[in-house]
Image (cartoon, rainbow, N blue to C red):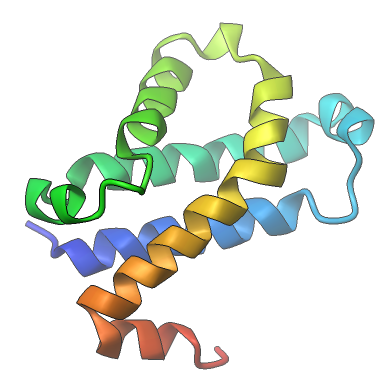
Length: 123
């Protein structure tokens, strides 16, 4: 079984990537691009899957992270893929992910400072 900090890093890296995919893209361009939609959705699925694997202990200590919403979105997207509302995906990618990213970084810095410090290093 993977450790919590690895799932948290997966979530943070996926949030950074999804945010980058929509940078300098407006909603109309997003809604017209299957490539960008697919890329963003894949990263949101990674976030949701990883969130569901974070231990109940960590989730309990960090109730301000929207664990249930993140995993719930993943479940809906996977099981009702052809009914995905791309406007919702757009709002998540352009607004909600920033807040989730900030909360996850705070969690990682508090719970796993060594891992968090490695994230700050350039690759």
